[in-house]
Length: 451
Image (cartoon, rainbow, N blue to C red; front, side, top):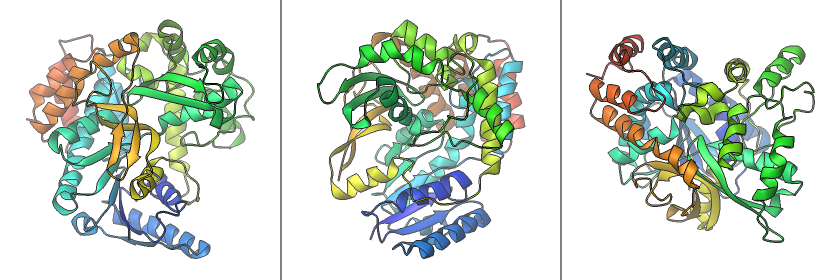
């Protein structure tokens, strides 16, 4: 019997969503599922929804809550982590706004730039504690992480626990599944694609037509403007939701119906996306402004109305989510579990794992996002050719990832300062020590360990 532990299962979005994915799998039928969350009442709420769904659909799964993670991990085959600490949006506001007051222009401030650093400093220590328990209790388990900042988390975890089977998962790759078929006017099964880079900082590297073997990238470049320039962005989605009361789920591996939105600003929320495509010739898989969290000139090139409207919409959407389960596949972790258990050998589109040469000229220790082959031995990345210009952008992140990991593992305020000073987003120096002290004070107790 397979045992799956969901850490952070009290989350409305993660807990019920992941259970719905698990319930689609015939391979996982009969599995034992353990729900764990520091908020036991939230985990119990997820449990009640899950038990009702299992009973109504006569499913063969056993499910329970265990607030003692060490106990719950005993005999685990798979562990899925999706956690945040504290008030997510209040802390995100600090990550984003406070560095701006110190003269640092940053986009979003969630995964890259100073905001991404402070987010990392808060969330990685508790993830390391979870991983320590896995190493102690279930060292052979495969651990999947959905928390952000993905690449910094994965890089630090692998530095601390090099033998742990720890895989970062993100659904940004799903944008290619959504957009390539209608843009190229082809069925999904006639398009083969690969992408590579860092999480939220990855591009479509190659795309072909399956029936002819013909390179489809020239068609992508030709058709992208007509397709993306007229597509609604978060400004239009927010306006429509306020007008109609209709919320649109914008994440996951599914089509999104935006047919009710007609009035669109050209390239809404995709100004930076457009610039990368035009100047570098490659399609970012993150088709809104998230790509700009890692680029020093992105603040000047981004659609700031779209950025603010995304943040407002996302915060409002999560505040209104009702915890329900749908037996529909939204994420990719369940197919990977199935592939490991059946030794399938299939190709997964994107995993976050240590580089080990998969992207040339990046260090082996940095966590890259690449396609991988899934077998009983886990996931093995595929060597990818990343265009020189994009690789130049990626290499700017090497020092940041290195210093983030070192600052956390050494619990060092001085290394946090260094991590900021090697970040290309940071173009000032005088106030950086004060910024770090300000954030440590504001984000107590999560940053109290920095000395």
